[in-house]
Length: 465
RNA sequence: CGGGAAGUAGCUCAGCCUGGUAGAGCACUACGUUCGGGACGUAGGGGCCGGAGGUUCGAAUCCUCUCUUCCCGACCA
Image (tube, rainbow, N blue to C red):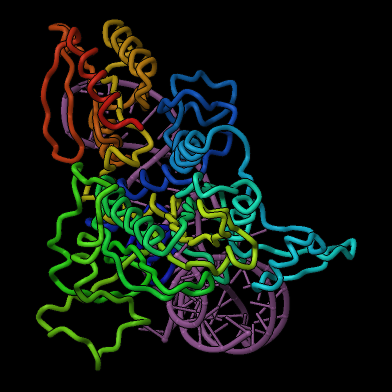
């Protein structure tokens, strides 16, 4: 991101998008910029994702064949939001920031350091710095038996911070989408197992998004606790310097055969056995590994997990009754993923000279459909059918029906980086065939229209979640 | 809150040092050719050079002030 020439001056820094300039090709950069802005009027046009000819952007009266790419680009963060909403079920998040300070339960929030403020009506309020307190309070009120444990609750919401200096687009803004998990266990062993499960799950989650995330021992910071790891991905444009053992780069994340009920400690141990530290923890004078094993790079933090025991459960009274009638104070941990910044991180880690290379996990669309000749009846009919079939199958699709040159459409589709490209042109459609291209590998093949349903079914079950 | 840069065409920039009334690429308009991997030719349109003072016969250019933006640091996912 740092080298992408955009609207920046001097150093050539730019906002999103974040792939670096590989060639000084202004056309790509111009196109990239057109993809960026959240759509100015796209809200009214939600639901269909088509690429438009520039004509469409001129005014409401202009004939609309499709919609300009940037109209659809607001979908990237929106898709993340939608996914989050879907995962959460309907309705707004339950966890909000402020609470009445006079509430006896909330009162204990002050004891653990929550910020006390007075609002314009001179009411005393407490600002919850994190959702830990709220979640803990919910559990304290709702969970009363050891039989309900262990429990793992999650909270997905946009968070807001008074960021001193917002920069790098979605990487560091005043608002960001965050997913947090909170584990509740009866004892330390259980809590440690919960921690390990999330540790492994996060390794796999990042791997599925095409990211090599390296767990690094981290400060527990304001959340507290005595066990914590940051998940950092390496990118030239990372926000901070990181140092780690070369061996970590060669390790393979756990595969599909992980059994989360087994003891995961050995797996965690192998990942934490090697040296890895961010610059604020790295002391060049006291580095335990030799220079030839030490990798110096830049990293982006994409997740942070904590074990913090009874820090919140104790003061907030999150207890259950055990089998012997004893009161048990719960052991807790929390596990966060920066969802919105992941969008930027993925692009940093996955791009080439032609643009973004979205992994299937994380891509705003799974399929890009290109109509090479929009005024050809056969092509248009085929595309409409394919488009509706894909949508019916739940496959998120961007349909490029602009009246543009073929080359421009291919290049734009590569730039946007959608994993699968379906190309419909007069040459192939005569024989009932369309072209399939995979963005990541560049491999192209022809498939028959008849067989498309199977292809769609495979895609729909493969990557959608 | 400190430090450093930049403001000139829709966009990215050159011109400024050595004052003489503004250029390039892309984008845009028209016509023709082209049309399955970001086409080409010809002809065009478009800028009171961020703002205000000052120096000068003359200021984008030199001086002063001012506004805005960007970058770096502290902080943080």
